[in-house]
Length: 176
Image (cartoon, rainbow, N blue to C red; front, side, top):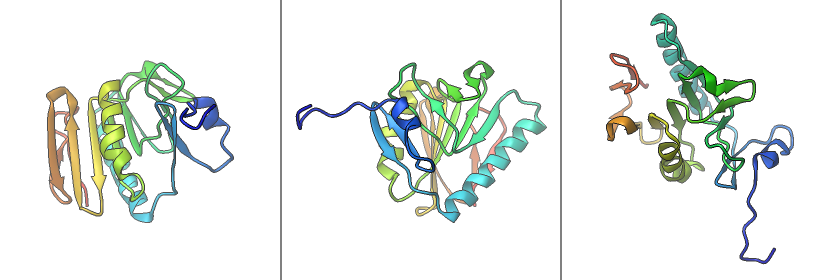
């Protein structure tokens, strides 16, 4: 392999990582992940609970998962992500390894080393894979960017505002 040839990594490489080391794989490139901050975990826990309670209280068929949770975005072995929150409504996509195919709704909580990956790389990947709704939560900016792909809409909300969930009519979340 010469200096100009980039190695294409696969899901096998992700599973071969040392215990405790986490990474995502996008188009054969490995992106290592840092441990989440307390703020990140607080926001993730809150969002998971709000979504879980909404699904439970409305007898919904969807399921919500918090990271680490494996999402095999495409039918290949060069894409593997662990979104902070994944909502899957098609039960046939789920097995003991994770979700095979695009979740209906993904939420990523931005950390300093994941900004460009969340705002650009994953945005493109999620949209082309068939994710219906994608939220980027940026606690530094106190802002949530919502991509409702089916409606071809992008909206920005500040923390403390009611944010309508595109895949659920009448459901809003207020991020604090």
